[in-house]
Length: 129
Image (cartoon, rainbow, N blue to C red; front, side):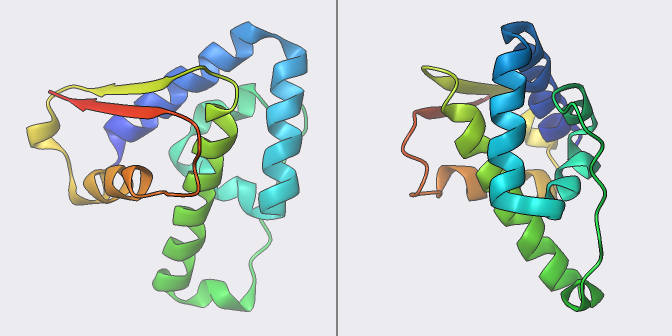
């Protein structure tokens, strides 16, 4: 599950690394400021995020984490924040997802989550083919 999303987010992380250490640090600081230790939830679906971060982050479980619903809510929020922060460093963020007809339900839910994020004021385009 989430292989297309993970790959697309990984591609973005590699683009960020090419922008240089100062951009990586800005993104790292913004994500940690908003998500604190929950930034580690992103590492589950975006393993390439560790290339952007200069410090190792660890996730500390909270009492809320006992339910999968609470964990999914935190992950959804982390994904939205990730895209908002990343979008601020690109004039237009475009995801091109190939073979979308084979997408798993969690991937489709993330796509829906991203296109319905009214708090993201930066342009985001998702192309499915």
